[in-house]
Amino acid sequence: MTTLHPRPGAGLWLIPAAATVVHLRGELDLATRETVRERLQRALRHSTHLLILDLSGVSFCDAAGLGVVVGVQHQARPLNIVIGLAAPRPHVAKVLHLTDLDRSFPMYGTTPGRGTSVDRGRGTGGVGPDPAAAR
Image: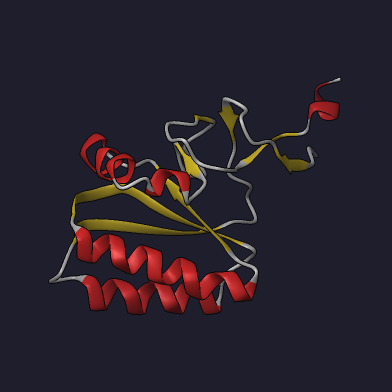
């Protein structure tokens, strides 16, 4: 079994199996923010140390949607839970980049069960393979 350690700056990123993953779909906006907030708060209560938001199914995201994600991140910090974002579609990734939120969250290219990913953001951290395990 490979031990996973944070390796900021590495190009290859894996999401550990121990992560809790929430798959978001549809629009993340003013109309859906309360439902999404409730779902993410529920996920926090049952989460591991890493909560990944799979954005691959998000077709649209506005400021209200981003506000929910940032708000949940603030709630997660005192619980020692890291919020990561995975597989944003190009237009959502662009919004994350323009708002510099891709610097505030670990960014993952794919979610568990979909293989290894290449870091697409400028995230400040992530989980990569243990270099000693490759020997």
